[in-house]
Structures are given as C-alpha cells and as structure tokens.
Image (cartoon, rainbow, N blue to C red; front, side, top):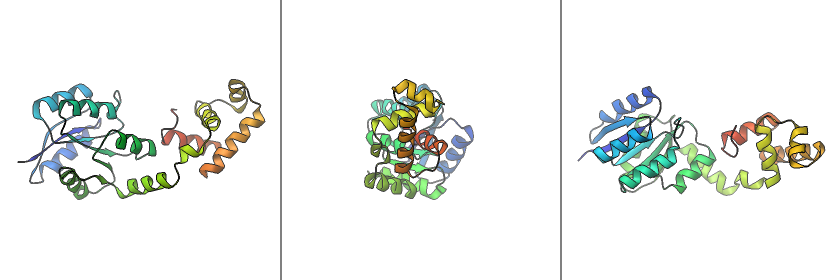
Length: 208
C-alpha cells in the first residue's frame, strides 16, 4: 500500500513541485495539497493521509494548530515540517506538538523521500542544521539567558520605539535601557541594536 501524503504550503510552485517529486517515487502518493486549514481538513477527512508535510509560514493560519486539528481527524497522521525558517521557536513548538520530523527546504529530494519513509517506521527525522540548533539550544538556550526586563526592552525596540520611549514605557532612565540593550547584545553575541532586533524576530521571541 502506498504512503499517502498531504501537503500544506501557501506557495503553489512548492506544492506542485513536491507533488511531482513524491508521485514519481514508487510507494508514495500525494492525495491532496492546499494552502488553508479548511482545505486541509477536507483532504484529511476524504483521503486519510499517512503523512502531512507542512510549511510553518502559511498566511492566515497557525500551521501548528492546523496540524493538531488534522491529527484530531486522523490520529495516526505523521506530521513533517518542511520550512525555510528553522528557528529555535519553531523547532521547540514542533517538538511540543509531536511532529515526527523537521526538515529545511534546502534539503535534496532524496532526503525528503527518505524522511517520509522513516517517519512511517515511527522514526524522527531532522535536517542536520536543525539537529545542530537543537544541540545548541540544549547547551545554551539563548532566549532563557535573557532577563525578563531585557526581553521587554527588546520587544519594544522591535516595535520601533526609541531608547527614550522604551524608558518612559518601562519607567526606567534611557541610560538603564541602553545598559539592558548592551547586556542583551553581549549575551547573544550580536554587534548592534538592529542585529539584536533581527535575532529576536527571527527566533520568534518577539513579533515585529
């Protein structure tokens, strides 16, 4: 029996490319691809896929919650993340939601095919770069080394607030705010306030 796959991705070219790739592999069949929660749930109900390949940046829906909804319909469904954003936050959420694997979109076709077959054997599969981030996170979870005050300052900085405005909002002097920013940059090994904000947004610590 073929391994039945469903695909959730907002880019048509990605869905079509994956469908063509997987359907060319003996023993694997794509039963549906879509870019929304409702369409995915319909596919799951109608075709009962074995594996869901899900992008983590789909406008209009939280891919983690959507995957959970799909698994409520099909409890044996294996979820495999395929994303261009292997951030610490995404990796942590994927593990928490019980994903069977986490792959980056830079992987070769053969790796994706092998990953699908592996998760059907109850194995967990990760891209090498994802494994490296997981190990680094275990060794030094960067977000956790920041104080709540430093995180609050970074969050306001990410919203475009100046040092003066951040100080007013938090009831601290501009000098104290600068100190928090400097300490956070030192802990995260970044060189500028811009890099600090980029790190926080990229890792999902704060929203832009």
